[in-house]
Image (tube, rainbow over all chains, first blue to last red; front, side):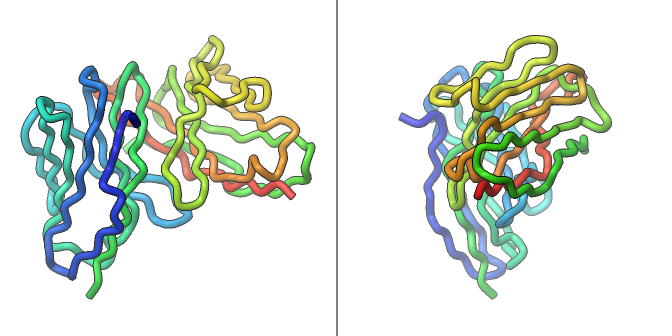
Length: 109
Length: 117
């Protein structure tokens, strides 16, 4: 079993809609979770990180963590075409950050 | 946010040659840096953890003699792909964690696209 798994998509939403990206992890000892956005041919950029149960909001982005269910999600409100990218969920375990396979999001006008 | 500089951005080399990639944390110190590899349309795969002043820790399946890692200072780690072959062609990305930060955020370099002919 992979340490971090994402719903691989691809996910397509209309402009203005909410995009929901999901991730599960296997190591109960994982402390911190991250969402990175990666445009094609570019390096990942950090969008959100979360380490406490519950929700964390930053602008149009909300990360949700449920440690009991070993589940992490990212909601993008008012999706824009510029949000179209691959989203990587990462979790830390034993000091290492490992990633899920990524979810390709397309926001169409 | 913290800045991680990686270069070269791209390199083309002949099969059998060695290529060195540098990763520098510009405005923070990092005792630990990580090297990832990414093949087209795939996720980032952790290759190794680079520890300042000590040997790197390699992930299962990664040849330590082929991918030499040196972390000689708190701001610089290098990855050398020795005797590169076409199957080593990939996007290599380094990342670093701010020693002074209370969280585990990683900052990524801009990546190096390696093409081995």
